[in-house]
Length: 126
Image (tube, rainbow, N blue to C red; front, side):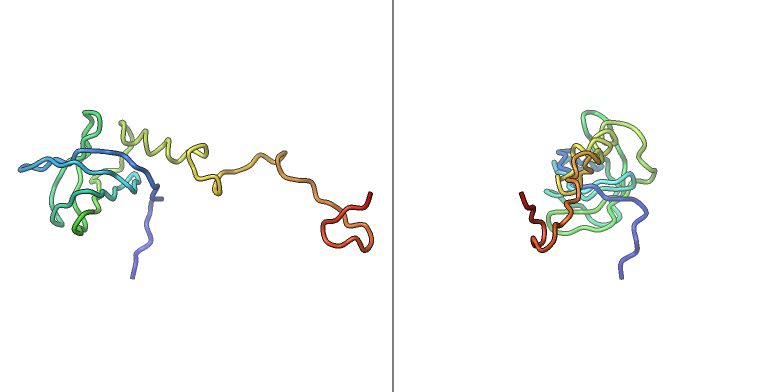
């Protein structure tokens, strides 16, 4: 059973450095929200405390789950500032969203075409 998430997860690709008391390793954030991240390329045991370093800015977190080459990290506080938050905000903007999810302006929609007696669906008569 999955518990519904309170924050929207956004697909990103952000190279970062994970640091613990004993080691540092490189990884990539592939899924990000204000409350946590999924990181690939490295893993730590669940309940491990770590910090995510991006351009000298640090976000602290706790490993919630871990697999061989990826893990989920929960932030103790909602992220509201810093380079990681800015990258999340950019990823949420429509120009960075996949084309299928971008909103089109109302003027770009084709006008409805009235069918003229027996011409078939969507056909116009000259």
